[in-house]
Image (cartoon, rainbow, N blue to C red; front, side, top):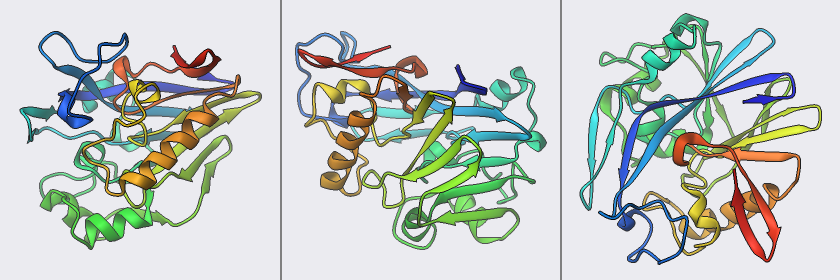
Length: 264
């Protein structure tokens, strides 16, 4: 994907095996919902590589080489991000910045190894300050080695409590609700604009099923309001977007007319 003069490459660290219970107690008989005949949605664990100027930016760091079980027979299976980066001609030392949309396990898994050492030793690690308080210093669930990595000071941590421009054309904006410090990334060049919404929107089906909430939402009413604001931004004809678990990590936008539809 090219946004003006900026290259954006979707990568996947693995698979999120989701079931309807992640969102709802029912699956509607409407086209476009992501579940197969067995009630399973095979969604990616998405990351994104941004190349612009002298910056090589990774948005989200996957789950890491683990298998995490979730309620209702769901699971996350990671481990593929290093292969994806090598295939793209990028080494860990090339990464100048890692932007974590939030600090859930499937977005921070490759930040630190099992001893808490930084995987991307020369990178700035950007994240919402609210997530630092909740996950690193508070009650939020986090693997011990990831928490250790955040606490041991071996890498440049950049906690944000405001919107911030990382470099020309790449901005981190606050989108709280799914987690206290959740952020989205706005990429803009010329008239073109793209939004990486993390888990603020889990799946495009939430456009037509607005009551579907993520099981992981920390503040569901706030997450609902944030999601609606993002849908409205994605109605702009020059703006496209995708999320960390959108099927095939496809970019799309919202079309208006007879209701609203998602178009890729």
